Image (cartoon, rainbow, N blue to C red):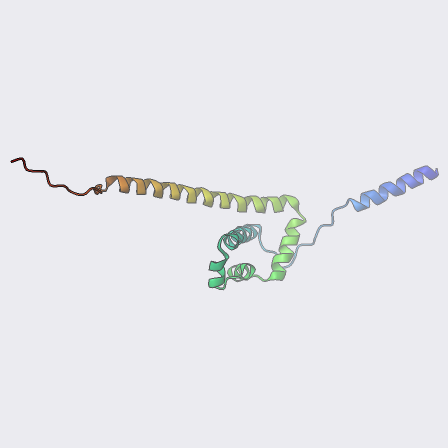
Length: 143
């Protein structure tokens, strides 16, 4: 009898501890589509910062401030929306996948443009008349 009571108590405690705590929907929730755009821009800003931070500094661009201004949001709204979506893994995954698709499409387009430019440069170089490096020598006259 005592064993059943202890077992029941243990199962009850385990079941309570496993329950997900879902965050309530904030009043000013950013839409899924808008969050995907924000994460896309965050990835771009982060990449720019890691690649050439001096350009961002030169133009006085701070990553998060840029995002907040562009989307007309503040840090509290962003954090609350991010926490809300993070508490719903399926939705959060969908948001990140949408951002990732857009990034991959941009990378593919940039690679295609780079390849096209390379081909155009090759055609341009091949169509230019070649200049001779040698010194022009007058043929000797035979007397």
